[in-house]
Image (tube, rainbow, N blue to C red; front, side, top):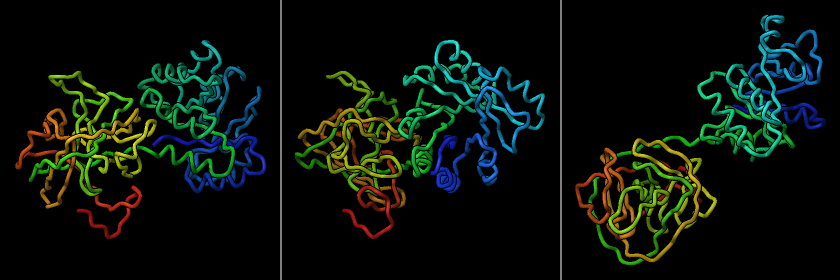
Length: 368
């Protein structure tokens, strides 16, 4: 879970409502320059005192962490910790040039908590800091201007900053920030399915999902005719005799098919659009969200594959009737769809909930 710090300095009349919302949403920390604001907070929220200015107070309030700006205040956290035993200190660094970028890298490597404020819109300086501090134990908190920027910060260099500090513009921003921070993609449970029938079913439209990402050799997307059963379709990372590999593509299935998305939602393959996202899954069940570059829908001959789990759950996948369209089996085995036969084993996923407009819901729903 990424850390959410809410900066309430200078909020004005919405401050009280924002604090109440932040506490309710269980944000990780609230940053204030008024000790009275910190005194209102429950122990479930980290109280961060950030006095700002050039002169530090002689004594510090009852805060969990005090942020200082060594460049402006001329003192290090080590010196402050020696002068104020029992008080935890972190640093604030504003990055505007190469020298302050070096300061940020040093702070990220050595401090328990570093709040980094990048004044230019490029994320390359943050990438440099994250690379320089790889393996460091301290927390790197990056200032975000809004929730959209926070989402980007969480994904920089695939690992992202440990958290963000954001000043809310309105009531509701704390909730949106928390939702963004918690929008991790959980792994899925894969099961072995035994093929029971393979049949040619005529012509229809199938979808190739081209993404903005290279897939691994044991990775693809889950696709199925019903919301309660899907088969793992592999990407085109494996060599083909008549065409080059396209490791960004999954020849996924007929347009009516379901696939998994964020927050346990499903999407029809026909709904996927350029700039959207789809869940990539490997043979261990590890997941990640990848960006869709385009979806190619074309008329092709189709093949129906039926399979059953050990518990008796039936799964169906309709995909292009062609040798180069493949699915995955146990042990990362790549299986050509046109060579599948009853008794073969493929990997799949069995969601337990029915679906209403893609959202999981417990209700009676018969799919056949």
